[in-house]
Length: 70
Image 1 (cartoon, one colour):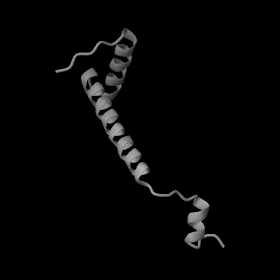
Image 2 (cartoon, helix red, strand yellow):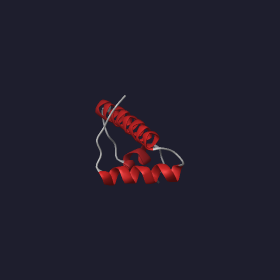
Image 3 (cartoon, one colour):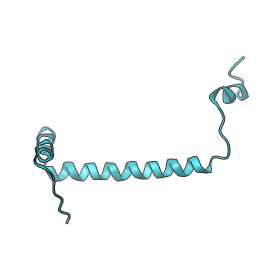
Image 4 (spheres, helix red, strand yellow):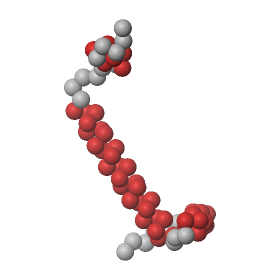
């Protein structure tokens, strides 16, 4: 169980969004947290992949190496 404090405006926005979705405040918050965690995992994986990249080539260099530019 988790308890958080939100100001009135955020609560009203959550309630409006939940109503539009035919859901409730808890479901909207749960979905937002899951998306946030997934986004952070994706960012972490991207940063790891970027740090492991040995060299970077411009798009022009790649196109030339593949024979796409004549």
